[in-house]
Length: 447
Image 1 (cartoon, rainbow, N blue to C red):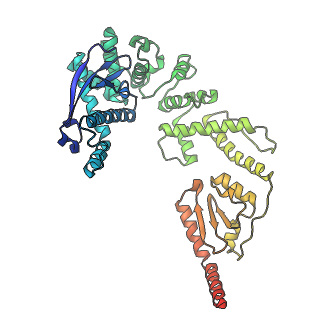
Image 2 (tube, helix red, strand yellow):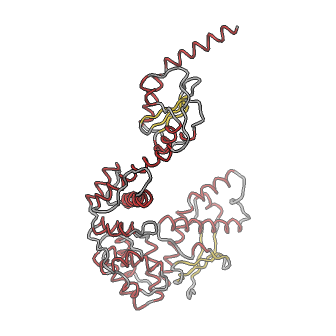
Image 3 (cartoon, rainbow, N blue to C red):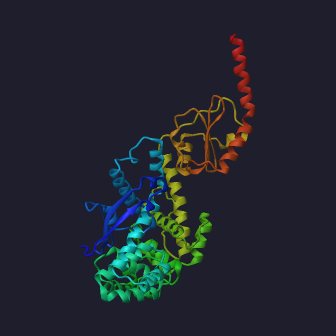
């Protein structure tokens, strides 16, 4: 429940310039709801904006929510003036509507910050406390309003803990602060002191900005994992999410080093930082796929070697990538068990280098489609000519020897695909010239 309500007016100065000439204003009623950990807003005392009852952690969610608040305000303002610009067909109405949508996030944020300022005054947040909250915001990468709302909730529900929380969050390590603030927002009714006691001891020495879920915290408390550097903390954060709860990968936390991730980047040609979450996410998925291939194909009927993913981090990375390559060979063997036939030969012989790269059987096309992630494998009933050079696949029309399509891996146009296309065009100029002469002479004889 909200004990203290505040009333205010949204005036034209909060709205886009194109709407100021209408002289719009709107009565609103708002207050802080500690149960939802956010502002609750009513328009004209009747219509509650549900989207404003609580906010997400990310700036994107925050902005989109503010934008929706602003859209609701625009809607009610338009009702006041007889839907003058929201549904009008005049050019000026369309421009005003377009401009208002573009400015929605900005205006919504402005409105929310204005309301928040009034609410903090209403609940007696002093200048010194505001400065302390700003210092906490400066030390954390979380959304600023997310931190402010967490502190306001403690102020409303736990008067005794408020000063302790302000003091603690200014001096505790960033990793600990991050997890405390997230818990304050997720568990709206759990007291600050209980949240503080639930934190693993290792987080009291963690100066890295990481988010630990329940599984990660349990592993830390039981000392199953003991991260020592940023790579290990980030790896634990990555590997304990809902996708990758694997014992081998969790235990890798205690062994992983910067050099291991750098080695993986070199193998895969990844240009991102070794500390980036996306790099560690890629590594996690490669290892998970390697383990999946091991479980599925360790004993395979084709006697193809598959490694068990064990040992040092470098060994596990090597074996996972090896298993990926071996799975391609298994796919080839499976394809060979299907019916096969020769693809039609070109009516005019290709240059020697192109003939060497021509896909001559249906199996060749299917394997190319599997390995290069193209749809070329579905063209086994076509009479056209198909060329493969590495990961680049080319389709050539057998009637006029023109290139139909030329794509690199995952159906992308790249420098490699463009270079090959140019080389083929040069090589086929002579054949195309002969075809043009033949068609011209046929027309002449027909006369």
